[in-house]
Image 1 (cartoon, helix red, strand yellow):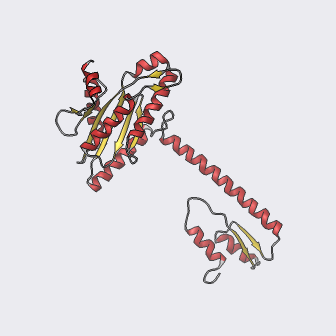
Image 2 (cartoon, one colour):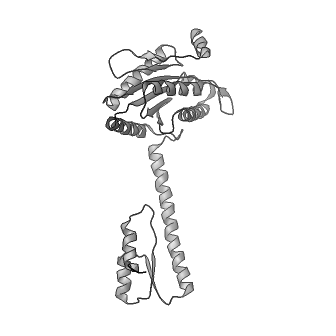
Image 3 (cartoon, one colour):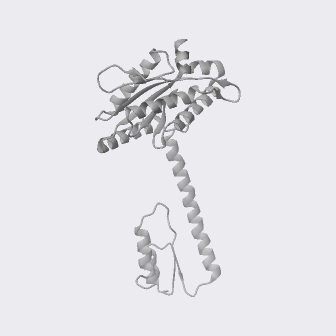
Length: 269
């Protein structure tokens, strides 16, 4: 190897500090004890001198493979624990804490790039009656499907988590008021457009959504408070609707709804 020897190559590989460990077996014609020590200290895991026995080489490679197999198992276990720590057990969406962490990150990024950050506070209407009528197992299946539909209604770079109980929180990056209203209505329609089939029964549901976007410098608490106030207004106004709130002073307003079916449904409530 012109320009670099095996020991230097080991040092360069170790200096990379890759995510996955690389097992190094150093095969060399140098067989002095100090050469072996230098090779191992440079980062080699094993050292074999020439001429080598093919059976011994295979045995040492199998030993290295056992180390890498153990590493893969540890990585999978670590990733599983990381997923459990950041995701909701039932819906596999982001957990409450992880969603708030994502919100803070989006607010910071929006401040740097001067782009607005949006929030949707989504609550399943009359969910208690689902548990009371069909049981908690059906209720869990309903929540899981609601989360899936909401997630599918968002853009690929948005985030949604289970905020608690039957409430979901969506974090929307670079989101104008027009984007906010369109995405919120899409999420609302995704739940109400067809019943949720749980195997045992079909459950028809709607959601109420409080939506807020901010391009100034609100704290996460201010943004969430505004979204929660808009959600309360949506509930108070009859549910199954989107209300656009604001972090500024002023009353929230209901999103325009051009769906004649929804207008008729609300008129009959």
